[in-house]
Length: 332
Image (cartoon, rainbow, N blue to C red; front, side):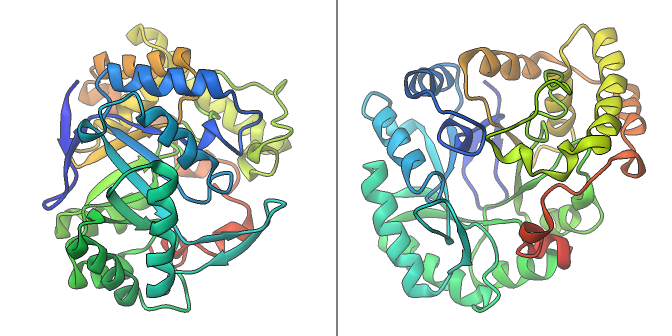
């Protein structure tokens, strides 16, 4: 497994990380045994970065990873945890809380659910509009000083917020969506991160399966997040699947799957970028790991970019209600 360093001050991690959210929520029924087997296979294959959030299925995802950690070598792994989202018992979303006292409360519960003494990268899931980012980062900094956190990360924030956070404490990485059909960070956010020595952990590299090569109109997404996602809606879906057909033409020429080429494209955008793959099953994990063997020439990279211009992507990446909470969209 190749490795990459998350920013100037961050840890060294596997070249691909595993996003664990789908093992518990938002993508349909979860399979505990398959999830545990996938986590074990990922670490056996050299993946060291496991990403979760304390609000994924209201703590279920952390408990699942905690169960897996009973048989894994925790010291060889990097646990990345997002916090701050407020949820109700029926799955409602109530906003975000990143007050210093809330930060320290959230991590106390995460440490218990995960069954660990420290978290490698701790990050607010979104910017809390009621709390200066300096206060939130300062509180995580206190946790670093106390040994409960090793590195501080950010998620879905814009350039100004990144700079303000980095002025308070060293930031290891920004977690943000980045893919062939979500290239918005290239305008300002990615250059800002490179200027400050902040790494990128890129989630949504397959756009929630939309550009994996496995999605079709026959899959409604009923029962999971994609049923509400604008890019999966009606005529938007038709237009976006047409982009997948363009990608498939290039993938076929390279002798790789669509998913492998899409992941390889993100990884090729810079050594400071680590793609997170949301594999819920060993089969999909094996396919994703195959992206490490895909070499894209400059011509291939350009062809993939030309095949997926922003003007041809239909629909926003999140519903409007969720975009309203994203500093990365309002202050790119």
